[in-house]
Length: 514
Image 1 (cartoon, rainbow, N blue to C red):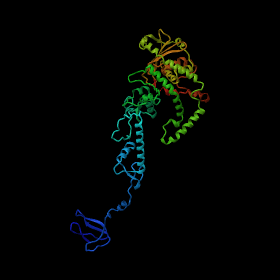
Image 2: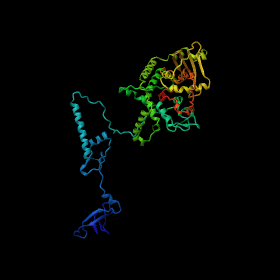
Image 3: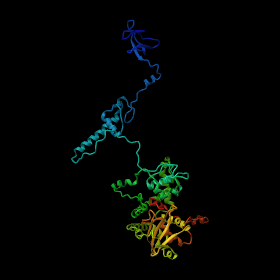
Image 4: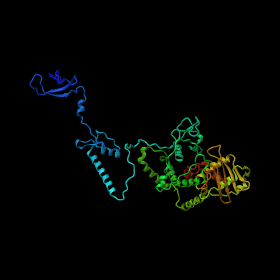
């Protein structure tokens, strides 16, 4: 079949099957689908229904039959034609400001979401009108919102103190290996709690920097950091605005060798109060399940397990505080407050008379002088030290000095003043010098050159070990210092002495002693 096109040229329009070809307006032969319906008079006249030939695309029929999906820009639900509404400028601004939704010109909104928008806008308008009608209404002085759309950041950076990550060098002294040990998670967590310093996992250090698996006091002081921290101290101003009085242990500033007396006393108050919580936590962590990091799939069961453990502890364990010890606690608190009211008088006396350098004023102590040293019971020692942690460390300190040279000296003109050189338990090359003034019945004053030795609320472990030995341990028939021989109780295990609750040792973490 042939026909005259619009350019006056004769063109074929019918070929085999139902396909057709014709000259389009650009002079190119284009295949089209055609269906002859009703012929008209004339040689080249006929009636056609033209349809583009998509036989070359096998998926064309499937694509044309699939209905188009029109989701709502807010609720993402599929909308019917009667429910579709266009998004005008006001709705677009509202979605950006309240829901952080960016819309396009082709997006639609369903009738239900559009109705919610008008309800919210109506309530806001009525509220503003009521405020304007109020004679005491004061307009807001806030700055207008920025034209830029507020977007929630994918992450928030915290400016915390941290250390460099290294495997080949020591974390503290930066010395190369090979004898380096990897810091455990408990050691890294302890550093973060005490110093607000994050140590990357896998970091290593020399074995000499560790004590009982944790970084020693000297090592903590020398840990290099690369950024400043935001911790509990940064929230103190907020807590004060809320009417909450917050206290935290003090730390030695950079360049200082010893904590001031007032700061050391205040830190002891904080750690003494904190012992109540830490003692309970230590009892819970005595169960293996709670002593390790738990996986996330255990979160639904942790609450039940914790209630079971607490119920067993309340039923079968001894109470942390005796109900009859309220009077004793009150007396101890009053004594600690009275001790903190004055400074360290012995330190002032030592510095004024230069007793640290004038070695000619001191002579070796004799047994006659030591007989005048007062005797104390364990309860009196606990009251003197305001805790049990120092008494626990006393036996290990004294054992080292009894095995070596014990250097206890007495003042030549004042027999009630002792000077003692004591070895650091962390660093073999470091010794601390301490002074003790006593009478026939009591310990009057004390002072040590260690970092926490200036405090008068309690005493450091160095002073406590000397007082413990001279007033209690040396008068006992059996040897109770050093490593305890548990083989003595193999015949009858029921005779094992009742252990002292040493939870207070955790409270001393903020005032690190050597």
